Length: 425
Image 1: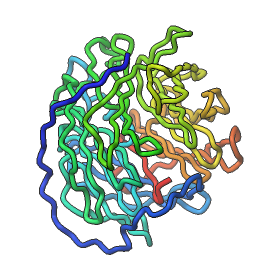
Image 2: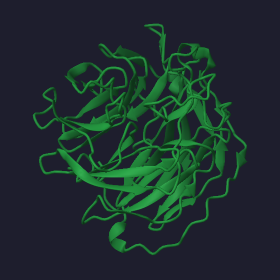
Image 3: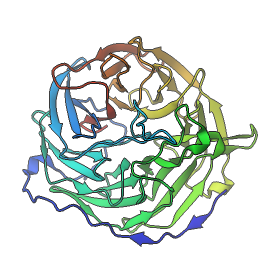
């Protein structure tokens, strides 16, 4: 089903900023496109999403692609977790039920503070990318409980999706000093609370779940801001949404589409994340129930496009996906099956499966850079959160787990959220 709506807008004032004058070495213009360049990471970032004070962890990447300790930095904001339906209990390992919650743009790092409804902007020191400096006071996300973001390098723009009572999308110009809100909140009725309720229930009755934004991304030609809504699984299928970009600004008009493979009579029950395949008009949406949905030409009228579903062998909660320029393939992590899965980007057919043996249920956020893929492995029980490194220097289908890195002495415990690298890949 495809339809268009115009939403009323409400301006949410941005948090007052502390004006700073960062050195020009922290920020440069995106005058050129790296295209398919294979960029080697020098640092990896994640955050602990702590409701008493959110913190970013910056780890060094060694020349062989493995990790070593770095530094920890306060975001000056608060973390937060979605709740299990019908309770006031946080969901646990995956506190946001989303992706793209921490992003790098040039020499700047952006991270959501869901508990304080803000976004923190850090300056990255290029001489030591584990050294971060807050460039301003955290900026209002435009609504309540931001969980996912998207950046357009060409438009110098960041957009954030909010999942709480004041739900919707707000966009910002990226400047050397931080973020400047450029749109009102494009409101979106999710019928949510603060904090939001998890859509999938996590063991409670699934029909009690409520929808949230699970991912945002810009199309490759910067003509669309794309999002996915996860919406309660079998009871309420998820959907893909698109905001057009006109004259360098995101428009409030939005269209919706629920990916359905009519031949297989299969609908995206828990659409969690989507990605445009580089150098193509193919869109791949990943259902959190172990199915990939391929839309051949999502740039056109979605009503006229064919959607094909492909089951991920052995997939459980397949919710995070990343494209690697080194192998020209896609890598998936699964919250219920502790492994990296490699698939063909155009067919979603299985290329390889690489098990992780650290006695944890599975990985969440994922990032590819150079000949490494980094996976966030939150803690469980007495096991501390860790970053698992997959070495793909041998090429497609030849990955090997080279490290399961547990940060020591930085205060990391059970929680870990998000994944970003510098330089941005």
